[in-house]
Length: 230
Image (cartoon, rainbow, N blue to C red; front, side):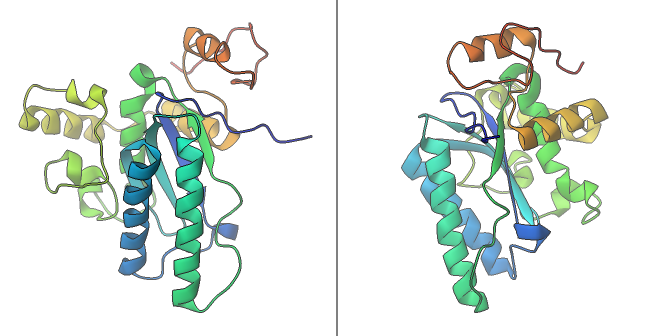
């Protein structure tokens, strides 16, 4: 059975996961982490993709991004992936693939899942047991949203700006969201939808998406109710 093409539509936030092949490490030094961030920043600008959040783990990375064109996200990911593998292989004296096939992604409903997805991304190092708190991990966008550093890769989503009228208010409100965490149902929904490539949102949202593309956006057939987690 042929794979469905990725679901990518401009103007909507997408959660992206790219894994190392056979779960192998994709970073060998701090230089590698910075190299990937630089490539993401340059190519996000080049292809018109706003990156709202990220985390770089030892053998995979997550992005939350909104492309401005239909092909912006796949073009960015292709350019980043190829350039990074070439640089990494040259530095390590290796050849061959680094990635576990193509990246996985899902399109999410902004009002219901965008902030939850940001929190989910920020808490990855904590869930993995790498740090006790997300602010202790260097390779994510969390410190940017706490006001502890300026990250040129990040373009905050308008929903984040609505958290408060001042930088301090927004940082405090977002910190509270991270402290509260993501409930297990939302966490499972974000992971499953991203790995399977189905849109994540309420039934009306999914039905509206289906009108914009010939690609099926949910596992259920078009016109049937899509039940999103509560």
